[in-house]
Amino acid sequence: MLRQYIQASLISEDDTTKPIWGVLWLYIPDYNMQGRMRSIKSIPAYSVATGKHDPTIEPYWKQQDDCAGFYIGKDCKFRSEEMQLVTFTPEHCLDKSRQGCEFLVAYARVSIRAAKQEQAIL
Image 1 (tube, rainbow, N blue to C red):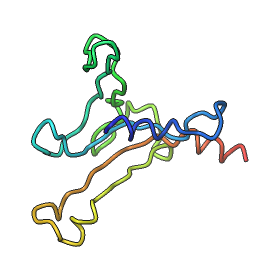
Image 2 (cartoon, helix red, strand yellow):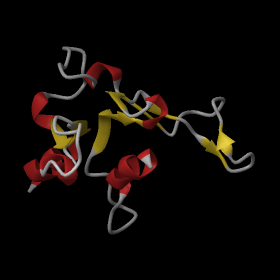
Image 3 (cartoon, helix red, strand yellow):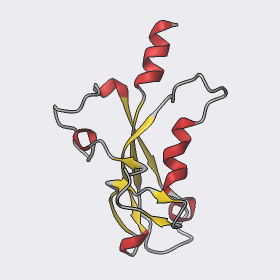
Image 4 (cartoon, helix red, strand yellow):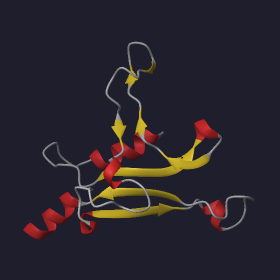
């Protein structure tokens, strides 16, 4: 499931277009930890040969440690204008149709550097 979120940044109309954004950090429910909110540090690679996650292969995605978290350090290679914090709360939590999730907010920090560069060129 997480691969879909990360891969969405790679979708383009033709093969020559670079991704317009890239995921730097995710803070979402971790279903491996009973749905507790936490930072997802990486998404392991999946081996087609074995049909399992393979820790010996480079991860499918890895967070940018210097750009992760609620507060960005000075070592992040992106300027604040080149990043966007995206939030999401499920509708059933907002309308209170499900108990216990009224304060659930998932976060993703994405790089929008490519979009900003393209905007500057235009």
